[in-house]
Amino acid sequence: MKIIKFLLIYLITLILFCQTLLADESKLAKGLEIFNEIAACSACHTLKAAGAEGNVGPNLDTVDLTIESVKEMVTYGLGVMPAYGEDEILTKEQIDIVSFYVVSSVGK
Ligand code: HEC
Image (cartoon, helix red, strand yellow):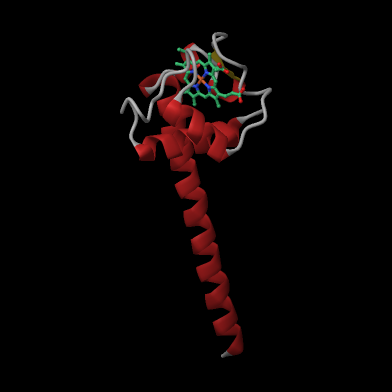
């Protein structure tokens, strides 16, 4: 019986792990779409992983970013950088997703 219990726990852990991986994959795919198409961050920013070569704003591969700092910048903007949150260009969920995408993609 012990071995069956062990196998069950192992299997459940594996399934949960795969689900997390798949969820992250789909979040990253959505993030890429927001970055390049919906919000067109790529028009102004370089981010190698997204194939983006904009040079109006800083190269995102070379600045220090956290999910929180990207969220803040995308929500409130600064200078030429649009305020996607305040101006309701993106939903809060889209901002979370694109921020996760940017931070996960930096330097790749
Ligand atoms: C119209 C051009 C433009 C677009 C579109 C744009 N940005 Fe920016 N972004 C800028 C500029 C310019 C700055 C620098 C602002 C400053 O420091 O005055 C900036 C700054 C940033 C920073 C801070 C970088 C640092 O130095 O820490 C992040 C992160 C960022 N943008 C992410 C994004 C994301 C994500 C999107 C899409 C949702 C986006 N930007 C769309 C122009 C743009």
